[in-house]
Amino acid sequence: MNTQIITIDECNNDGSFINLYYNESIGEWCAYGFSAYGLRLFCKSNGYNTLQSFSKEMQMPCLIIAKNAFMQLLQNMTDIVDRTDAHVRISMPERITMDVYREWVRKLKE
Image 1 (cartoon, rainbow, N blue to C red):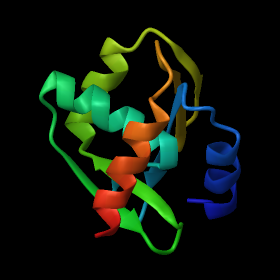
Image 2: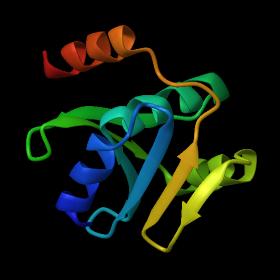
Image 3: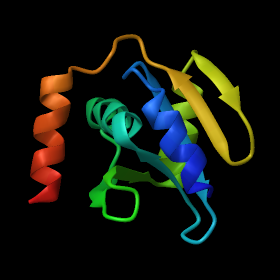
Image 4: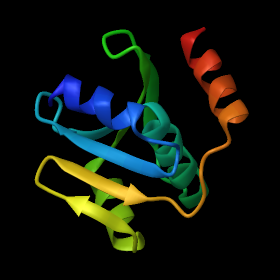
């Protein structure tokens, strides 16, 4: 997992994409920043369990999704913009709400 690419992708994310990265060390898919929040909204509305936290290393929120939930996500998403073995980029139907995102980040930091 290339932390520089993740940081650049999230800096360029206007809140309308979900970027997921395969983390080989834990064997699961992860999302950071705006992508983490967008993924949280999708998973919550579809009843998928996730693990969320604030990454001190990345200095942004992170969310881990289990492989089975990830596969369901891919089956339900029609707007996959880019996909490799280690990265998936999905276009969201709506941008995230920044005020709600900031409040979520604040809670994760506490």
